[in-house]
Amino acid sequence: MDRPCSSRFWVVIASVVFLMILPVWAAVPPVGVLTIATHAHLDQAPAFPGLSVFGGERLSTDPEGRLGVRIGQSALTLGANTEVELVPISGGVHVDMDLGSLRFSAAANEAVEIHVRDAILRPATNYATQASITIVGPNVLQIAAEQGLLSFSYRVESRDLPPGHTYRVYLDDPDATVNGSVRAGGRAGAASKVTYFIVGAGAGVAAWGINDAIRSNSEPISPAAP
Image (tube, rainbow, N blue to C red):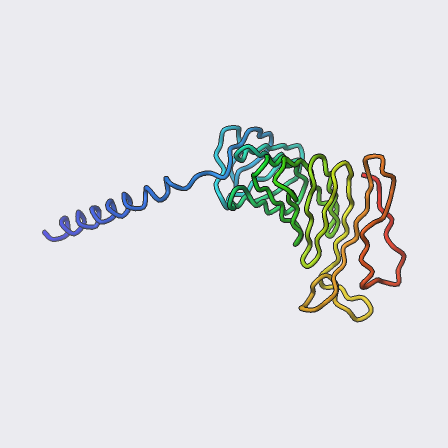
């Protein structure tokens, strides 16, 4: 005779707990909304325009895929074979990029930052900014600065990238050593090195911003055209 009463008691408790946490779930806003989705996925499910994207969810595209996300007045466009995770931050979004390529259009006074290979790319000002970034190799990035000044940082190093150029950026292997020194912040007090090349927009192939704090004895890598 006591078992039905006990069952009803736990049903009531479960219902009360659910009603208490439901407003918390409902109060979490999405990071953005999908505007384009072709051969793309939201986590493990097929993606389609109109889906809301919440913090911590992963977006990915197939070899022939494309995906667009509206975030406030800003936007992201993922190319083929791309995988990212969106994390909300104050006034915008943080994008953890694992592979592929993406283009972002950051509206004025909205924060968009791309985290890839321990590097961060973001607008350097509060003005509208447009750029694209592609993972070319394990430690090689290509950045096309279309509009607005970009801020690029890699561990202890940072540099502003003016618009109107395409940059090839070579990041050191954090586990490699040169002349007995640890590269790119391998441990506290170690030297760091990033090499930048301008490879596009009629600028020719011009090397700049090379940090010679540590160098190998091998010939420097020649940048390839995009």
